[in-house]
Image 1 (cartoon, rainbow, N blue to C red):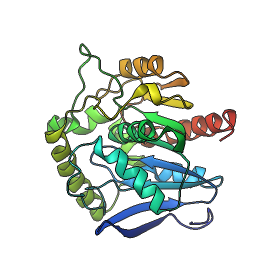
Image 2 (image 1 turned 45 degrees about the vertical axis):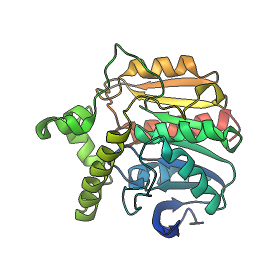
Image 3 (image 1 turned 60 degrees about the horizontal axis):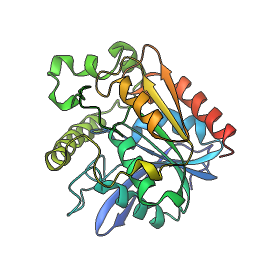
Image 4 (image 1 turned 120 degrees about the vertical axis):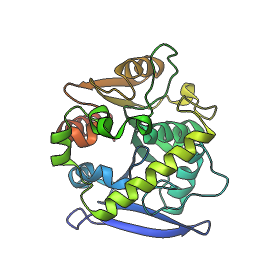
Length: 264
């Protein structure tokens, strides 16, 4: 564990013969946060800094992203749910709060539905958990380069001021992550897969959505809120697909309040 007064640590171990990388800070109950397609665990820097005073915050690089290698035989986003559960066992984490943004939220929900007893609660940001045939989802990888940032976030200039991705290494890892995300999507579409069973997600769930999300529109947040029995939905104005980076103070406050009200 990395004490809350220490800098965020990026740690690496070997799992099934492949490097597995994660960011970590803090001690206490485990809070596992999963990045979206193309990202790395560094996306949760603001949450690690704020919440590590009370929690052991773990932000993995999912297989094929950051410094974690893809795992042979794991070809779909849904397949990452079982990998996450095994990783947490290796790290000595039995029960945990699990959350994620976009692809990461999908992985979080899948993991929780595979082993509901281990997931104390869910925190889901702008993720696909239901199917809405008449509300299209946009694969951000298909956006023209000139429209990528404006399609992903509400205010690109504000995002650039707040983003934790600032180094050449970050840029290289993000490019690699986009290639990995594209490979996963070739094997399975963005829509929910068979391993995601919403009926098993009876634990408390905080859903956070950017009102201006053009990738996974707010209609999915409302539908997911109705589908989960213990869910609440927070909508953030003037915010796009990445609330944890675009509006970190709002997200951090909402998470703390949710944890407090649910005795987490």
